[in-house]
Length: 112
Length: 115
Image (cartoon, rainbow over all chains, first blue to last red; front, side):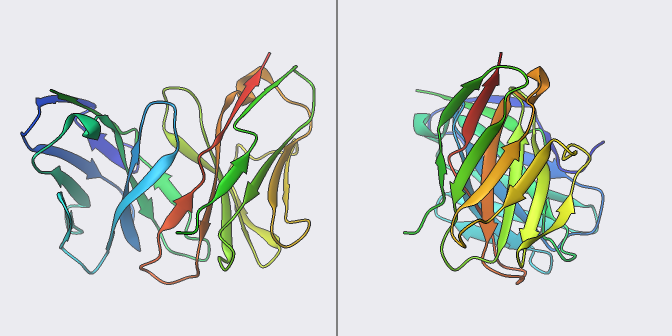
């Protein structure tokens, strides 16, 4: 699989339920970031987790990172219809440029 | 809250024409990037720019592409002779500095359509 592969590719849930998206990557990282993108729009930064962190919270978001498995998960609790969007993980490999490598994303649909 | 801005929001051009996409990064940020996203696909890195020069570029960033910071504030991406396959959303991003905790902030994107 490619760097930053998310699964599932698509997820449909009811409002109020929790949504969990996973991301796997292949190379070592400086940090891992999650972004949200509404259809055809820009990328909104959600949360960053450094390589030496295992879990991070921000509001209804919870991110975990397992560097031994090279994987991360994003949990959105108590989902709302407004959470409907594509969610991407992006790895920052550090080095001298800190460029991001994105996964293909998970399309989350929250039904009212 | 400071934000990255991009102009235009949508650019339509004929194949072979030159386009310049503009970005105004957050003022005190030091690392600048261009990414693109072809419709329905993932976001791809094009180029990074630091200390007034290109620090890394991808295979996509061939001789038809160039970047510059002409006046110390704007950050531009030029495509000299556009091809149909250049149609995509182009995102400018920037980063404060080299710390491990610094996220990249993205602009809203320019949708480029090459006819």
